[in-house]
Length: 120
Image (cartoon, rainbow, N blue to C red; front, side, top):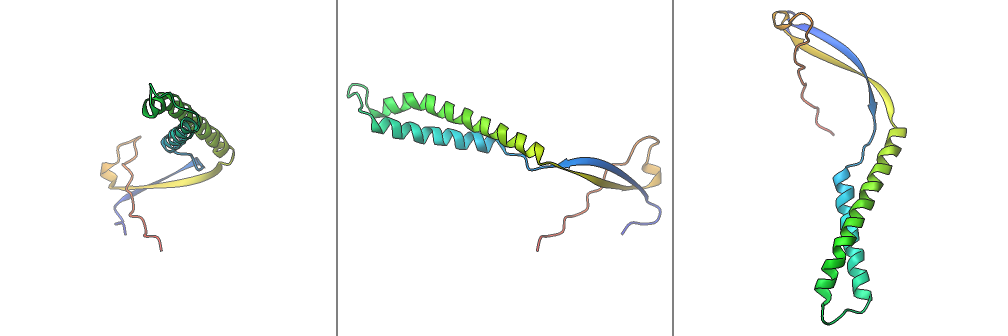
């Protein structure tokens, strides 16, 4: 508990709470799916013996991975727009604790983080 000689400053702020997508995950998964689709399409069609399967797959993978990553990024942008519509407004309260001597006029002391309670 805090001692009585500590100053408590409480501020309120309006915030928006939403679930935002993780862009790198969407891009990496999109690139992986693009590589898999490229592999399947390369395996379905006949291969030129002079070139070989590996070289042909590698060449087409440049396009497949790029297109897959771009589609993943577009999907992440779409998911981000949807999450903006579903955002909920909330009011937060920030309490800072410090000695009155540490508080400079016009400034707030640095916030003190309380330890999180373990989830049951």
